[in-house]
Length: 352
Ligand code: SAH
Figure 1 (cartoon, helix red, strand yellow):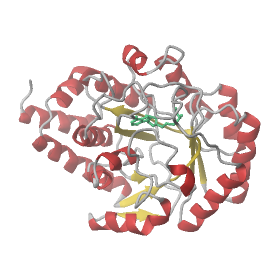
Figure 2 (tube, rainbow, N blue to C red):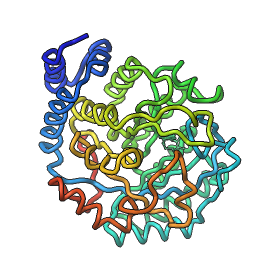
Figure 3 (cartoon, helix red, strand yellow):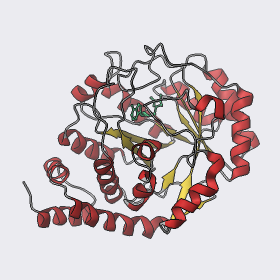
């Protein structure tokens, strides 16, 4: 046990030195209180405002396929979910999402999907280079899972600038409880190192409150993130999906997710830190609270309306309303209400 005063001292030291030991991380996470969280968020906001002002960067999320060869136990679009209604967008549809997005003010497009073999390197290269050609002032981000060094390199050369690949959890045995045997923590991390080496602005992250997760697991995640030093860290609460092996597992909490956001802001002051869709799903004002805990990015949905309900990673995932890209004005109004506003720019990371 540590006292409130000791907790504050750890937060102060984290803010000063950008690091803690494994047991300090664990203590801080286990002994958090609402008062300590308020203190953390105040410090996190200070730092966030120092580097990014009160701007919130937006990324247009295009969920272009929900076919997936993998079978992650938590994920609603896992291969074994026979009830998932599968779709893939055509190149033309993807480009039309970008066009809509550009008009709305997006300067980053995130192509996210399951690991879908239909999108061969050749097809992906065609899509990436066409986006690059038509919108040269935009950043192209990929989030399509674990691929070979060669594929990552080719996509980078074709014009992809950024890649999002959450490490999900650092600890190998925890990783093995969330994934089938064919997937490993080690390989996931190898991919992240490849992406960094090639030159991508790289994003990693994890689910908060995933089944069997301990405070030590989260401590390891923090140590790993420190070492990787990514440009972005995406975290959100685990939310069960009714057609997965984790259907009956409890969801991660808003409270712990916000606390982890605050800690990450102190750990990597200049990192891009999204207030994720999952955060907005577990609480109506989840994303505003995320911003007030130190987040500085949101990723509204640019996918065609008719497919959104099929990219269901977890139950009740937000797919209509203010998180949809068309409602950018409403989203901006929500943020202005708490003193922040949406910026129209590529929003590159200052964490280089
Ligand atoms: N297939 C790609 C990207 C798609 S999923 C990949 O593997 O990287 C994007 C993220 O959604 C995952 O990294 C995971 O952390 C998150 N996710 C999946 N299922 C979830 C669930 N049930 N609750 C919360 N987040 C989930």
